[in-house]
Length: 290
Image (tube, rainbow, N blue to C red; front, side, top):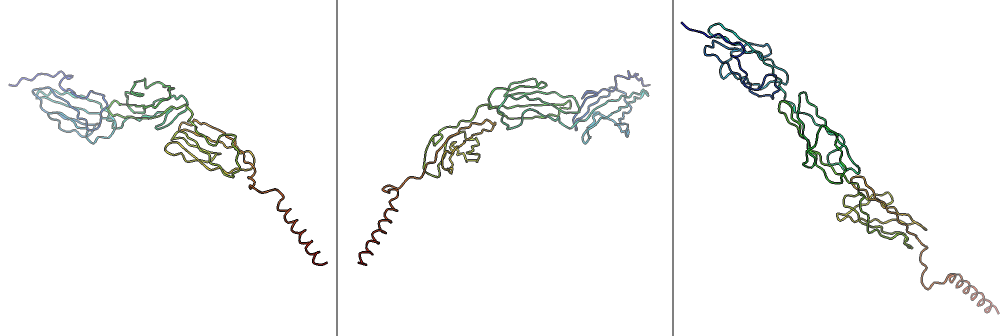
């Protein structure tokens, strides 16, 4: 005659991993165990679907499961006709968090202090961490940055299922105007020429304009452009603007004078010569007539 032990209905069906009511990734294996030496049969069903046989090692694969909530019911019966069932809940989540950063943009330059804020969107709870130039900060606060330098912002968010998202933003704070040196010609220059070459030097990444017209900047920062002069004073404005929007402006004045007179030429000489020729011709004609 066989002797059977009556189950404590809370103990025979054990969830080994992961925890009940946990958020899991797809393809996670849910591991159960059934503790009874006289087990007659065990079954399981998912979301109240078909009941299927459940045998050792009592694992359920979530491969191919779509995101959502799943209810798993495990049923067990021993040879003594003792029966027990338990229901477990799991949430499948395959979508990593979405990280957004407001206040700074990747590869951007700023000529003033910046304030940035990190926001994370995810259906399930998450953990969030942040570093600015390898120094940790509170990612849930608005962060102010004021020093002039290059920055690397790194943010990482991990949801309850273990899905991870990362975001890196590189930006620069630059509040200093670009250099604008070696300007030629000097202000106050006078010339009779109708054209003059304006040149100078600035930062290699600056945008230079002379009288509002873009001028090419060479790899060494030098630039030059020919400017047409009009009679009198000519105001020439040179601007250099860096990537952060800082602008340096210099203005020079060049005066265009009258064209140079030809050497050896006496004013009115041509008219006097013509007059003398005419007089000589008249006198010669009178002499012949006598």
